[in-house]
Image 1 (cartoon, each protein chain N blue to C red):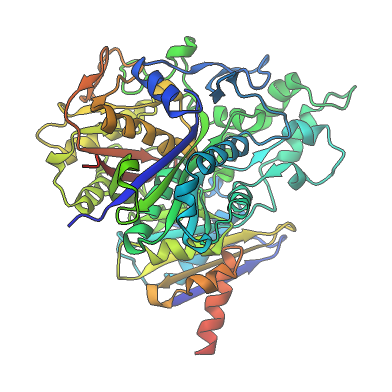
Image 2: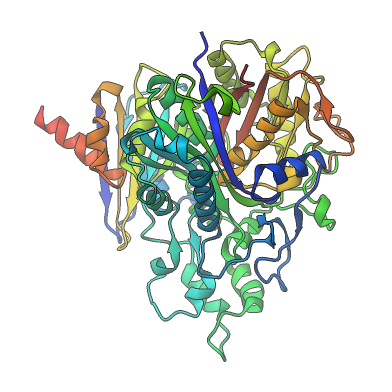
Length: 397
Length: 198
């Protein structure tokens, strides 16, 4: 018997917009949100590309002393609690939890340099404090968790939320992620790692799985979901079901994924086993697909292990060509792509995928969306440092 | 339950060289990672964990930094206006920053380096500044066997405390007890007290 945990509400602030209608329309149109950074001055920067979060008036602006990721998650919570008030009110405060993935703390470097306050801590904004403050504001008394496992943080947050609800179905968990590395200190810190795309074409800078991929592009935003047990969920409201979760650690190198993909495959097989299905029942893959050379190799090799007979046939999608890499929020934001596929019964185009790479022999969808029956989707994310996570998500029937 | 808690003062050298097989990795370590490596090595002395052992780590709220923030700030300041200069930041400050500094900033590095050192490939997570979430990770771990949990806290004065435990689910505090704690390191003081009371 499958354990079922349902996604019954969603709210997001993303590079593709701040409502589901706009985000889905942008996925359909294969619109890329990457471009030259507008939210802070990059005149002298050696790299200027990112996918910035936007609302109906354009790219969201912020002051130096504002943590952009805090801005986004506050907006996402406001929308969720306004639009889905009846869902939230079904649960007593002690039965509500918030469980979010996030990235490293914001630091207002400009404020610190121009400072009138000596302590650097004064210019630092903690993701954990943001989560706790949201819990207090929205009367969430069951726990306020912040996962900071780099690029798998929000996927792991969703995974833990799934595990909690499987055993404790009377809870409501607001789960997802929020992150932004688009500030002077963090953007340049990431640049120093050498992982950024080397492409001069800003809209085509992130090219997941393409032969000419040259690195990642940072994105930003917040995406949160209301997770409920099937027994408590309003059936009309169910967007998707999480039916399996697995995580693993390469324990290989902190800089590179394990090239064979063996340990990543282990996390996936645990998720598939937990879903009570076989790998053959997975209809399509929503992969991590960062646009770096090594990520493509590792994921392709993992797929060979999991789907030995048809790894080069099963349809593949990566959302990062459109929205960039949201680091601590990437898995949560990319769940929007999963919900899109389940609702529309389509595998979207992986934006900027043009030239197949023989060493990444995957069926990455390009040119036109693929319409097909989709019941089960495998969602994968992997982190700098070696952590892997996998979710199996099912269409609600 | 096996438990180890260690503390190093700000001016003390953390003896990580004596506790790590791949010494070339030390250049990537901040205080938190060094302290975690030592603490786990002492805990697991004469013990080899099954690679599938789940491992969860709780990071303490940041009170201390040693990646060169003050140097970046100084080099980014226009000498005439004493205000932030983007040009100075890009042309003077950033070249002074080692790429290795990023490994001292990313929050999952203690977990990743401990996992590499002890070949821990199982379920894992890093949680931030909340003992309750560390307890919850362990409580819902996909195993009925032992779990490795750990936490470190670097304090404002530069001193560092790490706590690690090899523990069964039934030895964890209840959710209500965990909710009374704040930083993940507090969980290990609690476990030490519980052990001593037995």
